[in-house]
Length: 474
Image 1 (cartoon, rainbow, N blue to C red):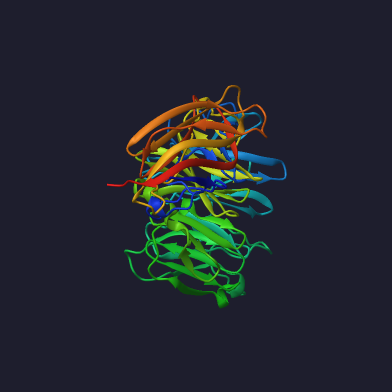
Image 2: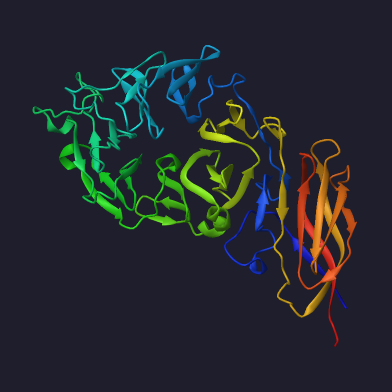
């Protein structure tokens, strides 16, 4: 009979890319609402209202945008067919679309129009609108050939680019270059100077492969289509070149495109992808959340970047879930247990509109705006590649601390088809080690760490499981 140790040196993230038996000890096949950013295992912080006043009305919030100017930043929420701006300490309805919208899809880009900061918003069903921090007006004109119902927007090389015109689904529009009386609201030609004129071009000819999003980088404009990716290079119409980047791309929503430095990340049903300036490919770790994505709907996902973490909001079996991807550690974590409609990021913080219709800041507080956080971490179920040996669990060694008063750690030890739950309080001294006696034996085992009633704890320095191992003699 040999005394053995099963060690978790540090906690990393979720990995569903292979059978559990082959996973490293620091990975989890299923975890939720945990923070492992420093290698310890702690219950993640929640979110609290950044604005106490809920968005008015009862219509579903669809998008959360930011309007920035020298006077400050305003939160903009599109709920139902109305646009609300939070300014002067209150939500104010500043616009409402006429008629009935069918899809409630929106996109926005900020630019200057005649020296004024404006947020241009498209819905793909009506003319573009512009918000200058005070009022909303219709964008463009028939004379400027810019009164089209575009949806997708971005700015590149000083111009406004647009696509998503339902009457011309493969068409990419661009504005005139501002200056000398020209404005991004004018998309018409300029005979005297073609290099500053507006215009348009068809991107591909397949009607079943329409444009689905735009994203500008420093030296190119990416044009996402349903099944392919193109790019526009050049700095004026005379040298604009549109070329294919990927002719068999995974479909993605424009709302999930996230720019990081001069790269673009986006989440699809097949996992996390990145465009590195030359080509778009799945990340090497894209399959680590494949089980989750199989149950989730990535068609209407939302993305944002906050302090080296990519955040993607999507639906899992109809419920809200957030995928967190740590760009530095290359690890995934999931957040569940709340309702959210959209998210965005500003100055390193992530914001979302939650089920109470409030704009909340993620990473604060001990609850999800009053809802308790249920957090857990499951270790891989393993036989240690010793299927013939019996493992008798003897002792679990933990070091850590409570982060809210009397926060218990629920430890479930499963072995040989039997599971035993232990409720433990961590030592008051962080340097102390908790020794938890265990029982039962079998050939396959796993552990589960869970919080109780929303309590917060941290496990530092990993964990060690002592067990005895032997082969049965028949």
